[in-house]
Length: 461
Image (tube, rainbow, N blue to C red; front, side, top):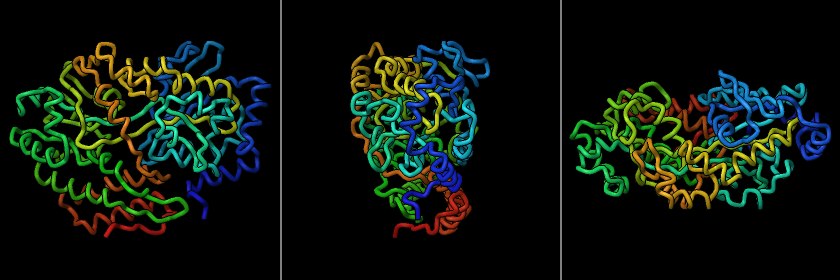
């Protein structure tokens, strides 16, 4: 069996790539492309507009972007074509894998030049045997010097099993508790972040606080899915170990299942909101909602909460979560076979390594960005990094200490599907529609449909 099972389509692409010689020889191909000049089109694969917006904000070569957001023109006339597909249910990965299958034979301006991955499946694409994400050194980027200020766990996450870094990110994603000041004032008599932190300092305290909120007619969180990342970030073993075809459900996942059932039955969560990234969940962030808090990293505040909020600025604030956690991270990869290696190198350095650029992203988008020294500066600068949306609060002073203590959970190429399927499959159990054994059966059916190569699912005793 292959060292790490990827998708059947990507394995096929790897075989084609090996025959065509655009995998392991990426360094020499980069040199050839540099000698012969760059292509006229840079194709970027992603699942939303987040990377495009950051690029537009800091890359000096950007001239303009089309009104529909699909084409960005650079000063030298090169066009960046944005190929966007939804992340849910693996659609983005499927479309990307199909493009990788065509890469060897694609015309120059049709080749994938840059693609993004998430923490949930980054090591599917940084796998050394797959060799679809170029080593950064083949672009002329030295991770030890050019990326020395990045948080170390992000560098490890973007590296293959041999320690070769094959991607870079502008983000570090420590998570906080984001709460409604108006609800805090009504229920606790204060909206002070330090006072609220004492009310949510650990899970036992949080449960007692949930009772207070319920007594006043409020939900602590919107959905059982809101707490998942705190548990999932603490697993001791990956969903699937390298070289294996067995899903091992960690005890922390079972803890999340039992606690979610207890909280939903107690009325601390809204039974009408099933999961995340749906209309009901989005509406739970509106001004007429009875939901007290969400658990979000910085991108969640800017890209999700802020877009769904219909009230005035200053109603939301941040404080420490009941448990430290990390959620997400978008990794930028140079695709093997790109005909634009110099442009790709410049873009990666501009968006993920330039401290001044990253600080600008932090100011413009509230992103907790990926330079340690920069985030220390932001945490200490209450006036310079005050958030209008958060009523003048400097969220970086809360994010920075969490970032220092992040221990990334062991990852596998199966994480996205396992995370989605475990939440979906247990919804009926939480709602009292099926029993625990039936929910387990439903998960086993759903996850093996997503990953046909899985041969067994093991549950903790």
